[in-house]
Image (cartoon, rainbow, N blue to C red; front, side, top):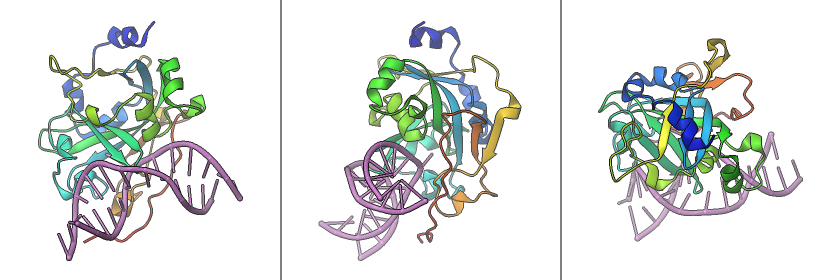
Length: 218
DNA sequence: ATACCGATTGGCT
DNA sequence: GCCAATCGGTATC
C-alpha cells in the first residue's frame, strides 16, 4: 500500500477536532497518522503552546508576520525556521483569534521509508522522526508550508498534508505528560506548563532537555 | 542599521 | 556530556 493510499483510507480529522482547546488537541494527536510528500508518520510526541499568556509561545509578544497563522483559525499549519537550520511543524488549534498550536515533536515512520532514507542521510531509522527538526525534514516541510489549510485545502493551492485518526487505538495508560523541551524562561516551568505529551516506550520520542535559564528580556 | 537569540541537531570527547 | 553551526525574526537604536 502506498502512503497516499493508506492516508486516503481514513478521512482527514475535521476542523472541529482542531478547534478545541490545545490541551485536548495535543494529546489527542498521539497515535494519529500524518502524511506529507510521500511519507507517513505515526505521531508519538507533541507539545501544546497556548496563546499570548503562555510565555513559552512565539505568540507571547503578540502577532507578527511569522506567527500570524497561530492567530487564525484551527486547521492551518504554522511552520517556522530556527537555529539557522531547522524547520518545525505546528498545527493550529483553538478558536479564530486565539493563538494556540501543537508542535509535532516526533513520529515513527510507517510509510515512505525510501524517501526518508534519502532525506535524512546517514541517520539511524530510530532517529528519522525523533525531534521536531528531524520530523519536518523527513516530511519535507519548509517555508512554503506555513499558513496552509490542511483540513480543507483550497483548489489550486493544495497542501498535500493530511492528519487521520489512529489506525490502532491509543491506550490512555501509555500517554505521559511532562515539561516542554528546550523552552527557556518561565514557559519551561515543569509545574505550570506540563504541556508535553508522548507515548511511553516509543523509540522515536525525543530526549528531554531543559531550557537554558536566562533572564527575561524586558 | 545592527545586535541578539532560538519550541535543534550532529559531531566529537 | 559538551559545543559549534547557522540565519531569519524580532527588538532596539
